[in-house]
Image 1: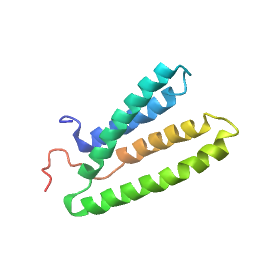
Image 2: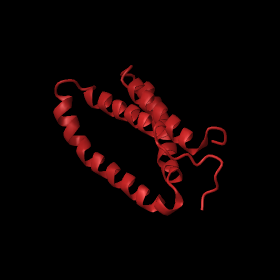
Image 3: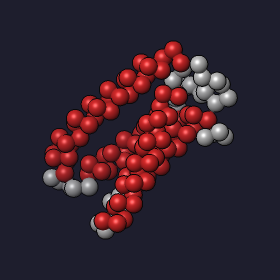
Image 4: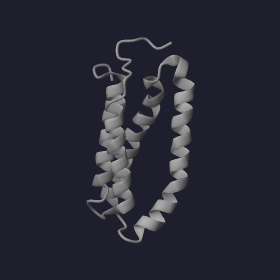
Length: 121
């Protein structure tokens, strides 16, 4: 996004993703859940493809690799969390996921690098 920069784009898409994850639990109507799942996936993809742009060019490959590695580790842990936390409250894993997205939003707002107005190499 031209006016808010790369950091603002990734932070806002992360915030919207977190909000939409929480909205997923509002209704059990399949159409409602499908709509929020599609919207959440859209904004999550903006976040995914904006990640490399936040890192400076010399560190871009390392930053993207670390982000990808953490994504895969979290994907491996997700079924374990869903089984254990889902027994007490079936919505607990969704709330945990939404909370992590909101924590990531705060972390991205505090990210010290802003590449707005700078040309990438």
